[in-house]
Length: 435
Image 1 (tube, rainbow, N blue to C red):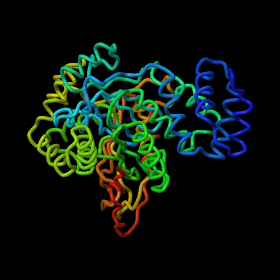
Image 2 (cartoon, rainbow, N blue to C red):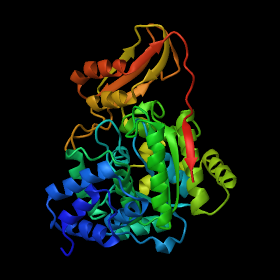
Image 3 (cartoon, rainbow, N blue to C red):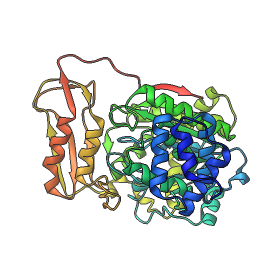
């Protein structure tokens, strides 16, 4: 290594800017295994305390994006578009937005992750369909995008491997919570995935990684800056995750709710977030005014074309499309329990993370990366924040294959709710759009 890691740590500890050569050399050598974890940990901690300039963050993102394979989508011109959510409870937006955009003229070539902890993962939801393939070869991926305008697969280990190594290190050294490190981690994978436009859903609240609007806005602004600097048409929405999105939490339950929305039904909050994201994606990928993009995606949803594209997509990736035609095929978990209110009043707030944990206890999420997902487990909410509740009302129904988890999940869910005598003022679902 021509540049000493000791010197890079020293510079950042003193609040100095690193050069492009220093950043690229550090990332390349760490990816190869030539820099020990203890030195990289020291540098990460220095970044947490000292921060990074915009230029440093742009170049760190680029270095991580180029540390492994990159996807070439140039054959599709400017129409390729990706969407990323920072994670939440009940967030099944990709299941709706991807076919909605693909049926409206965009090209969705997307890599998605699995869930860990209280947040769900798109790949896990898609695997609710028997035989659905979340791993495709590079040629299969490109051919499906060409033939159907849509493909969603799991993240490849060869995409941005530097980020994978750095994230594992950050996770055990208390260096996760840094805006430059979070933004470069997310955007390095988006740049490597090759799409020309990127739309981000940055969530805030008790069920989100960023707990405040202010921090969510800082993160969103930085990611939009990174995308635009690297010639990607980038936009972000900042959305509320102090309440679960929709009413279903858990894999096949969320797929069923997504199908409801694609068929013109489903919860208003979920539909509105999806229409907003899809509008921004079509605006950028098809280069049309926002009002025209919004009208186009609304018409696509109403016409049933988005649902048709959803079925086409599931079948193209090997999934049993009969489940898309009749979600009753998913079946119900062996055990269920109603969560009953023992009080009168209004739900004034909830801890969304705890609701996600209640679903995880049932088997809908992973407590560790090695945990097995129960695709039928989860929660269907009957009441959410701002709703009036009477004693004896059903607040939610729990589903699981493990009867012994029901009581712990019930207690966790009830502990997440705060009741009051009066209805509280409703917070906006979408706080801001950054474009």
